[in-house]
Image (cartoon, rainbow, N blue to C red):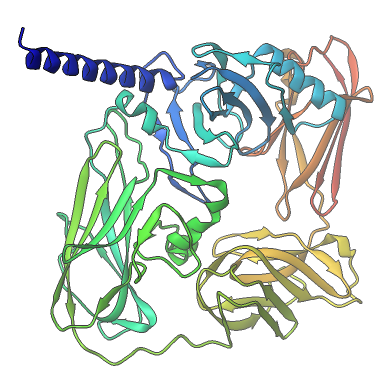
Length: 561
């Protein structure tokens, strides 16, 4: 055989061997957690309130109790139990350098469950966060790990699954490992485009007001007239084969006259970046209308790594009287692509003035405001952009102070800002019952508060509307299906707290602690008598529930099981 031919075949053989090894390695790094076809009810990086979705949600056919397989060799390093959030969750540290998380579980593996149960009784608590040594609970790839469920802040049975780095802070899209296991031939879709003149530097139809356009047949059907600096936002969703679910969009690009001004790619992020979501989205639209628009420009104090922009930070400078060709391009992990294409026409106009304000807050300065019984303390770097306060006072319905409407719009912030409101020292209420109330468009919520020398102070992450209220009302505790407690072996209560929220609860039978579980999504507190191995007999049942202002309700009765 010719030497050159033999060398060619040898080279081909080596290439095929490398490809085989690579494919085998990629496939064996993580196996799938279930032994049935995979479908998602939620994907990585979806937009959520104050955070990005940190994993994927695997469907379990609408049922609780599907067995979960461990995806790689390692050891169970942590188990946690919370009334909301992840509910029951397991954390596995893998030999390959990654960590995986399995959340909303129904049951832990037996030995882990015993350790969790022992901790709960030893400390007389429901919430649990246990860490384990590397030699305690070793697991192999493919081993049974736990049962999928619906615990925590979950609204239907599924497995929330995450892939993290070894430190547990950096998150990666599991589709990087499971892409071939999921069918997807459907591209993302843009539903509407928003256009924003930059404050004091841009105009849209000779106005400082933003505008929104519906997308029909991949365009907005209108030529936009603008001058100066303008930015764009998009309301968009993605879709997959075999489901009716809607998902977040992996990649968004803004292209003008062939040049890319903005690109986002949802491949990985850290928990430290969660609150940056409020800068990336049009927070005003979310706050007032519950609409998610992702901005294709970046504010000065938003270092979100998944976004890539040039010196103009995504803003388009309209400085010529001509047509600018704009494309918003959307794509998913399976390279399905869609675009919305439209024209912006440069039309010269006068500069638009900055918004009216009583105070201007600068994003790169420490801001302190003292105004008519209200103080703001906002450290440098907490604001994403400069903010224009226009403080208005109103009588407060149900509060004990004025209602302070801080601005004509709402500004999100990172943690670290504080608001203080004067209540005086002669107010004839228990000062521990006072709290600062965030007055949202359709609701109110407590941000807490500490009283000192006539002022009550709390941390805030939004420049919005606040007052001080007093909570002296105990939570309401109602027995559920009380007549069937003995027959069903389940003691259940519904819980209502309209002002602050639950701080703690504790149940006893004949004076001894017994484990009640709290489910925050439906505000139920439950004791499973069978699971807790309660023997038949007559018991003195006592349940004490306390809110965050120290108001307490006690339920007591004799109970025969």
